[in-house]
Image 1 (cartoon, each protein chain N blue to C red):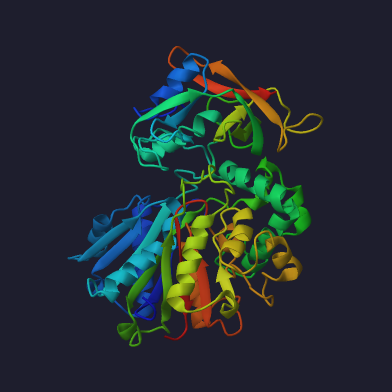
Image 2: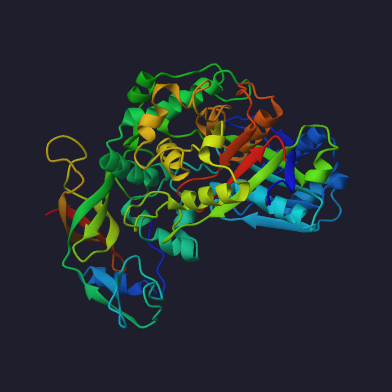
Length: 131
Length: 387
C-alpha cells in the first residue's frame, strides 16, 4: 500500500475522506475551486483558502486499465479514471465494481459516484463506483 | 545560441540488460570513448553536466577520470526531460566562456538495478513537492510510467479517433531501424504491426510493444565552442537551437488537470527551437523524437508543427517515418529498439546523422531535430551540419 505524502497544504483533503467528505480547495478571496490544492490561488494570488464539500459525482474524462507490473497493496487489474467532478475540477481515482472490459465496462463519459475505502485509522482513500 | 557551440564527440558503452559493473564505471567508460572520438583528453575538460536523477556526481566522475579542476557543473531535473537540456547547459557555458569543454553524461543500470518500469515507492514518498504531487496518483493505483502515459493515450484516441495500430506504427518503424543497427538491443529483430497487436496489454491501451525496454548503459557527449570544434577529429554537429519547456499547470507525467491534457510543454520547446534557429518544420529532413512510449511520438509531431492537432495518425501512415519517408524518425531504432538511455543515445544518433556515419543514413541530413522526455518538463535541440 502506497500512502499519500501529506503536508499542511493537503491535510484538509485527507481529513475529509476520514469523515466521508470529498473536499475541494476553494479560494476565500475569489471563490475559485482547485484540485490538486496548493498554498496560493493561481487565479488571484490570495493565500486565504478554505474548501467546499463536493457533491461526489463526476464523469470519466479518461481511464487506464493497469495490468502489469504489480502495484503494492492492489489486486490487478486496476481500473483508474480521470474524473471531471460536477464542480469543475478533475481528480484521479480508482474505480471499483466496474469491469475492465466487456458488458458495462469502464468508458469515457461514464457517470461515477465517490465512495470511501477505510485503509486504517489514519487513512481513508476515495474510490469511485458507477453512479 | 545559434552556431555558437557544437557537439564534437560522442561515446557510449554497450547497451544491455545487465552491464555487470557500476553505474559510475559506465559513465567513466562513455566519457573516455567520447573524448577519444574527438581527439580531446581529460585535461581539456573543465565542465560536466548530467541529470538530477543520475547517481554519479560530477565530482565522482571527475575523480575517476583524473579531471583536476572543474569550472562548471550543473544538473537538470525531470527525468528524461533533461536529455537535450544537458547539451543546452553545456552550450550556454561554452558560449559565455564560463567553460571551454563540457561533457554531458548519463549512465545507469536501469534494468539490472533500479527498474524504471516498476512502481517506485521512493518516488511516491519523497519529501518534496514531487512527493506531494504524486499523492494524488500513486495511492489510487496509478504508479508506473506506462500507466500515466496510457491515461493520455486513451483520451487522445477518444478525441481524434486514433487507434492502437497508429501507435504501433511507431514501434514498427523503430524496430525496423534497430534491426540494421548492430549496437541496438533489438538488432536483427524487426516486428510487424501484427506482432504489436498480439503483444500483451500492459496498461490499456498500451501493449508491451508500445513501451520501451529498460536498459543498462551510458552515453557521453562532448560540447565545445564552434570555433574550437572546427579543429577537432570529427565534423561538428553545430547547435542551431537548444531549448527547454514547461507548460501551464505542469506536473511530472501527470499533467492531467489542463483542459486538453496533452504535452503543451513540447510546444514551448518547439516554438523556441524555431525562433532560435530561424527554421520551420519543412526545413527538417529527419528527427529523433523521444519514444519511451509510442503515443507521445504522435503528440510530439503535432506539438512541433510537423502536422496539425489530431493529424499525426495520417502523417505517420504509409511509412512516412521510416527511411525514405517524409520524416524518418529514430534511425538508430529509438528507445524502443536501440536502448533506453534517457534520450542521450538519441542525441548521439543525431550527431552520427550530421556526420554521415549512421548505419541508417538519411540523404542530406543537414538538420536533425532531437527531443527529450515527454510528459515531463522537457527540452530539444536542432543539430546542423553547417553554421
